Length: 455
Image (cartoon, rainbow, N blue to C red; front, side, top):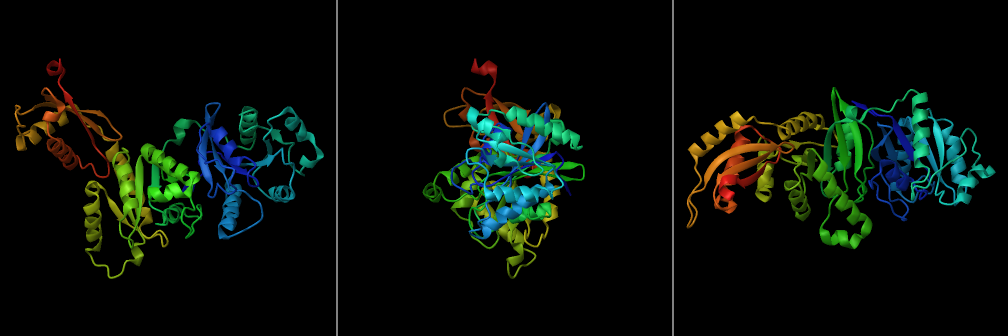
């Protein structure tokens, strides 16, 4: 499994020097959650930056301060060190306002041992005096350049920094790539806190890429990771666990912002993996997620994690669990299930062919002749019934208007759309799903009155 298909740049530095603000500025969108609270960035947060018509990949890492208050702090340092080792270029971000700190001098010594080149970046260069301070003796770190002044908050100097980054990458043989070469299936990994989403991604990647911890909400930002398997590419997005709305409100702005961002991630995902714990009952959180998924247009796969911990399994246990889920979420009857152990990697590799299948079904385009034949057979089997006080609606045609997800227009001869019952629209949808084996993908149905009737 190959990763880092595009040149990768790691942003490193101590806490609150503005790495996440610079990350957002480079990506030109608010992907990382920015806060004055130290430690907002826990896992490595990744995204693509477009410059000169080419793409590079930026990794935002947690702050390296050297004061490990708990296991999570140590894990943050570990993730930052992994990012530095895997990066093709490292941006060492410092705060020009604060001046050089002792821990930054220690970090500078570590960079000498890295294979990747390092560029020193002086953030918060908001005033002319700040920009002049880059020549002060305190910023003369052995083996590093004079800080390149930028203001992530205002955007000043970012273009010059990108020019330096691109030139350095080219000189080291890491040419930025055309965006058309980076297309892949976007896979969102969602679920309530502590069902094993990050552990699942670590298993997929074959490395300890995400911080895994029993502390709920270890992951607070959606994280993108590009993976290549054979000739196919996937962009996996880990998301924060979505809790009950009351708890989210009590937790404050950071967590609420993460939940809103998760909803946007699901909306733009090609396929969403709904991760559930096989040993925990289905509750309010799953119902909230299911509601978001149902209306998102994303393909859906239910990943039943911790299957190795289920006791007294029989040959029918999987079907029994699926029926249990479908009782709460009827729409899941058309969704594929996979039963895994993220910790032991049981069946994890089987995810990829299922993702491919769901994306293929989600992208299906059915020609008009086939749809005409399908509709004729469906109506012959079950014609629309007469409503109260109105004539039976006449169905004139069925057209596919788009894919991803498959969207159809059911054309009727009637005065009002609601003359055609919801039950009949659902019947056509179910027949489409059965005929064309549309597993894992939502189907959108729109009822349209024929123009001659409407006018």
